[in-house]
Length: 189
Ligand SMILES: Cc1cc2nc3c(=O)[nH]c(=O)nc-3n(C[C@H](O)[C@H](O)[C@H](O)COP(=O)(O)O)c2cc1C
Image (cartoon, rainbow, N blue to C red; front, side, top):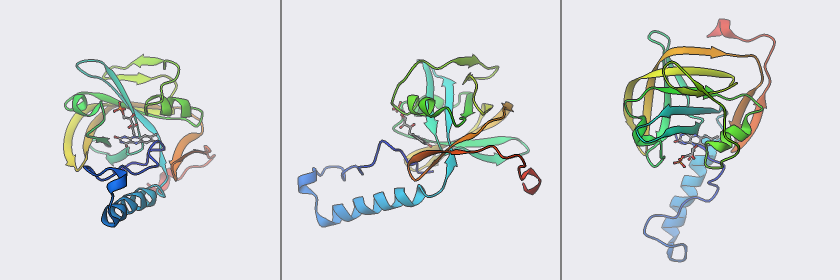
């Protein structure tokens, strides 16, 4: 999934062409990329952080590409940019997906390249995860698929839990809150 990142309002210039050398064709490509990103951003999502221990260090990366995939076996998916520092080390490693609550915007930004105070970690059975998140899924690696400039990492869920509370959401390049409702629609799923 292409992601909407609030840091990247400016669309990168076409490789090999400095801004002053951009032709109308390049500007049209940039406009299309911005339009594509803006269109994708109309799809409201939750916000999650993928955490795992890599060979060199502990990683965390904020994502909104989290998707449930399968009930039996229980599988979930995250799409990680090839250029992300976490990308290569995630291959073949257990990981946790931490779903954020409404009050955890700072945590989302911490793992999106805007470091804040050190987060509180929980040493999970399968992978390190973050304290007091709205829900978590500890996963064993299941598969990885080519997703263009991203890789689709699928994990088999081996442990999970959730707490009550409002959810952190992301739409139109902005964080927002989805209040916890009294009555869900689990019966429709
Ligand atoms: C709300 C939000 C959602 C994001 N979703 C994704 C995503 O699904 N996949 C991804 O690779 N990066 C996503 N990012 C961007 C990464 O969090 C960001 O690029 C990260 O800092 C990359 O890590 P690095 O700087 O260590 O390489 C998202 C960022 C934000 C703020």
